[in-house]
Length: 592
Ligand code: PEP
Ligand code: MG
Image (cartoon, rainbow, N blue to C red; front, side):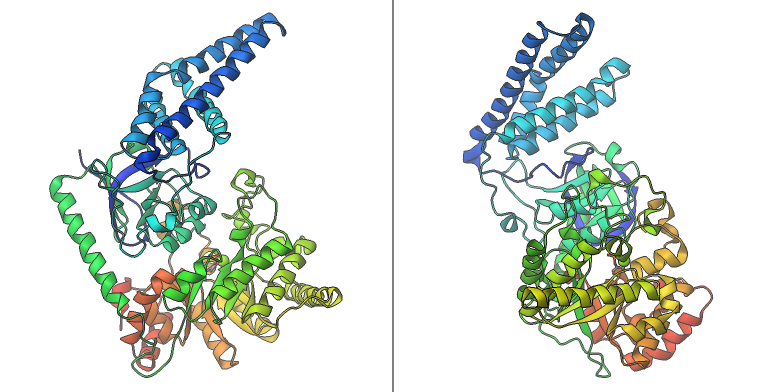
C-alpha cells in the first residue's frame, strides 16, 4: 500500500530506488557492489567468518567446563547455545547468500542487511524473551564482521566510477536489480555522511535532523536528493521497499502505485533536463545585468572536494570546513604533517585559485567522534565549540595554524576563524597566529602569507562589527549559526525546524548590516552559510550589496542562473524594503 511521509527539504531532486535500511547505522561497514565472478568468494568469506565464531564459542564452552562457579557457567553456556543457534540459523545463511548472489552486495553489506531483516522480525514478536534475542543477533553479527576482517576482502571497485555523479542514473547491476538504492536511517552523523560521499546510494532519508544540521549540509554536498526529520520513517519502511524521494517537496513515498512511479520517473527526467540546461552556464562569468561581477566560491569538507569545486566553475574555496579531518578518529587529532598534507592537497587542487581554510569547528552536532559524544553538557551548541575549543587547547591550535601556514606556501590561502565573540578571543587568536609564525621561523620551515578573516555567526559579533573590522582582513557570514543563535533554534532539531527562518527580520537585519558595514570599510565580505547556495535568496542578498557567495559546488550553477537575470542596482531599494518589514511574506512573493 502506498503511503507518504513528510519531512524537511534538504537536498533537491527526485530519487527512486529500493530501501536499504540502516536502523543501527553502520557506516563502518563497507558498501559496494562486487563483480559476478566474486560471488562465491564473498559467500565463502561470510561462511568462514561464521565458522570462526562457531569454533570460538565451542572453545569457550569447553574451557567453561573446567572453571568458574557452576551457576554462572550454566547461564553463560545457555547464552552461548543461543548464539550457536542463531549462527547456524538457515534464514541468516539463506538471506546473506541472496544479497550477495542476487544483488551483488559485498559480504559485510549482505550480512548487515540480513541482520536488519531478521531484527525487524524480532521487533514484531510479542514474547519479551524472544524479542530480546535481537541483542544476541546483533552481537553475533558483530563477531562475524570482526572475524571476517581477518579474511581478505576483494578490492572494492573505485566508487567514483560507480556514482554517475552528474547523471543520477540508476546503478543497474543485473536484471533483478534495475533500481538505485536509497539509504534509510534513523540518524546519520556528519562523519557517517562523509563516509557515504562516494557511495552507491542515490538518496538519503533520516528520521531526525534539521535543515542546516551538519548532516544535512553534507547530504547536500553529495548532490543527491535527501529528506530529513521524517520521524518514524526508518520504522515504517522495510528493507527493499520501493521508495521515491521528492527532495523538492521534502516527501518520501513508499511502495508507490505504477501511476505514481511513472509520474515521478517523468519528473526525474525533467530534473535531468534542467541540470543539463544549467550545465550550459558553466563557461559564463557570473555578472549581473548591470555589470556587477559576482564571486562564486565553493564550500568543501575534504581536500578531494577541490576537484568538484574547480569543475563547477568556483573561483576559489570560500570555506574549507577543516573539522572533517578531525572527526571519526576516536578523539585522536591529526598531527601537523597530516594536516599540512591535507591542506596542501586542497590548495594545489584549486590550481592557483584562493582557498579559505577555517580553523577547526568541533562541538555541538560535530563531535570529534560519534562514540565520544559529550552528553554531559546540556547545550553543546552554546558550549566548548569552534574557536572556544581551539583556545582551550593552544598546543592543538598552534599545530593547526602551523600546518595551514606551511600549506599556504603552495598557493593563495586565507585563514578563517569560527564563532568569535569577544575582543579578548580575537587578541588571543592573533597572538597564537603570530606565535606559530615565530615557531616556524625558529624551525626554519617555509610558510606563506595569509589574510585572516572572522566568521560572523553569533549575533554578538554582528552587533559589535567595528571590533571585527579593526582586526580582520575579511569577514564571512555564517548564516546557519547566525539564524540558530539569533532565533534560539537548534539547527539540528527537527521538532523546531518550522521556526528556523532565514527570512526573520532580525536575521535579515544582522546580515544586511554586516554586509553594509564591511563594504563601507572596504573589507571583503561573503556569505558562506546555506543561504548563499539557496537560489531563492540570491536576489535579496544581491540587493543587500553582497558580491561574494560561498556554497556547495553543486549549487553554483543555480545561483549563477539567478545572478545572470538580476539587476543588482534595482534590487537595492527592494531589498531595503524587505529588510525593514515586520513580517516577511512567503519567499516567492518577495522576488522583485
Ligand atoms: C554557518 O554557520 O553558516 C557556517 C557556514 O558554518 P557551519 O555550518 O559549519 O557551522
Ligand atoms: Mg557555523
